Length: 230
Image (cartoon, rainbow, N blue to C red):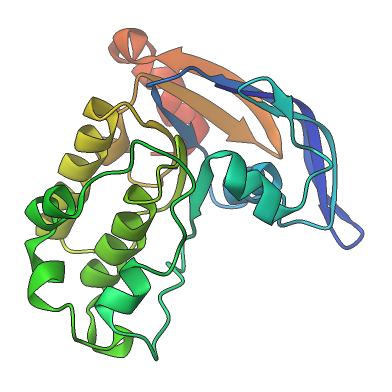
């Protein structure tokens, strides 16, 4: 579904990505692991086209997107849930939920969303400013789910959340996979990521340095700990 080849990116004059190569097959959950500053979130932003300077190749379902603006990339079926969540404080939960347009068939139904996130159903009339961090993350993921996007880019979805909310986010990602969606997940919480992912890419200094399938994770744990410094 997603093929990234030789992806490079810059913040101003700072060269951050140095030839990133990765692939995500349809229906997979794939993680990007690495220490702070390795380039994980920048890779997500470069795939989504929100960086001014990037080059290389990003193909989504066979379509080259490297020259496309973010709105065109989103319309193809790629959705991005940023680390800061992007909830509009002046809008209600319901208004935030219905803000993104439906871009294709196959979106998750409202009944299913409310079953996964009962807090949101109870707080449809609440302002975005009144939500907890966990509820904001639920809303950020929920509004993507109803759009019909096929590939979800999730950037640090468990950052700063309580363990009970992290478990709920984990159940949601599993439900997304069961519904046929594909997920590329940036996550610092390795214990969370290892329970969900089919494969793990490891980043260092703006490059992919390793790929470990879930089935080989235990045999490569020492190597992974060396990469992550845990």
